[in-house]
Image (tube, rainbow, N blue to C red; front, side, top):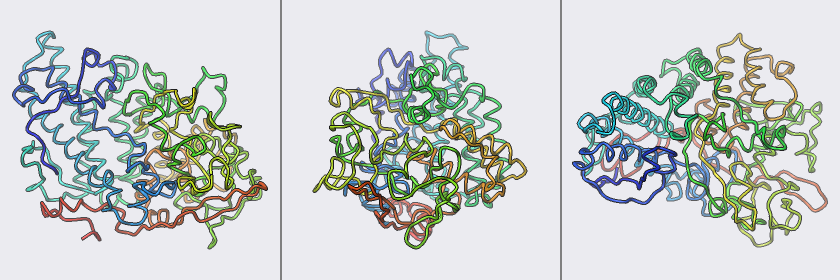
Length: 595
């Protein structure tokens, strides 16, 4: 880790932040002053501001890898422009390349800095004087909440590190900022030791975090960590640890994972729900509901699907221009793959292709073509291939002929060669034949790109809890109808009319497993789940070394599949390498295959 100043940089926080009206009051602000440790410890308000600055360590995933998305390093997308971080590093197997800096070196550096901040808060808090404007009871309550938040943040930061690097040194001491390196903390714990620590931290923090009512209904605390965050993370972690990649080492079973998801549902299932915009004239429009599940803020519980999120201020055209179609004046950006499009079912609930593998994708032949299921009504080779599909396709992907934007003549996507979204000579035109819609607020395009909108980063939402429970119950066995009911909740929100229990192709555990893998992929596309799901399922080599497929759309209306990009993914890439500077500096053991 890099050396840091002995001084404490505090975010600009005014009266609004003191009232905690929104985390955006203390996110992404310029430093106002450098305060010494003595000054920070001498006043509770200064200490509190130092602690709440930890919310800045929650990262926004949009264009996070040198202007490309993490899912552009999976089979779900390809970055259109040549300088995209995923394209110049992870996609070619060069994790040390500069384009991958934020995902590799910056993750290591920033997560350990966040952990150090939490350790300092936990170690120093009892020496800070009470706030004289509060009663002793109020002071003790505030300290309990602060302690619980610090432990939750620390657990989450360690979890983010585990996903990328495996079990790395657990540090609970406050390292000297002038010697801020992990030596002599280079001993790497076992997976069980590491995950047991994270779970114990979340369990210990849970009782003292803000209650549901305070964290989700009270606008004075919008964006603060609440008790549901701890239970939601426990559900995710136990699901991962029960998965094939980790179960033997973790000792966590599928029943443990099912119990964790059920615990959340029992505690909060009457408070969280899948988002439906009943105020919209198209309140029954499934694509609209799915699209806005990530764009409607949870302030005052207006969006009851969001559990854990980074609370940011509004954004403008500059915030989305990198990922909008070139015909709209954008740079193309995160372009969905045909691999992803192939995973969407038909709107009646049938699957367009005959069989799917454990990656969730259809089984492709040597030429990259899946076998069509004729009973589904799916038609290959024209615009009909996008018709009558799961509405999540329309909430995620911009394809030929879709209405979108404000500057083009007929406001429709046109990727035919030479046309608006595939002009001759524009190197940023989509390489896959698709552009991304999900997470791109269309309202910004109004008034000649003069609009604004919220785009908070959702870390966890209620749909995940339902799918966590479905996956775990399927693996436990003997819960077919319950699994189907859970899946139907998510699929029916997407407008799918059929029921999973009525499908004869989902009666075996293995077929349902592959189906759930597919369902998670389409539900959470571009939300930073795919990279970790295929790893925990032990199918990352199969999923991420497969070519990226796209389509070519011709002026006569026909559509042809193509290979858009070849990918590299080897067994060693299940884990990232430890940053080279850390290996050189500390002697910490690197991950297998990266020496």
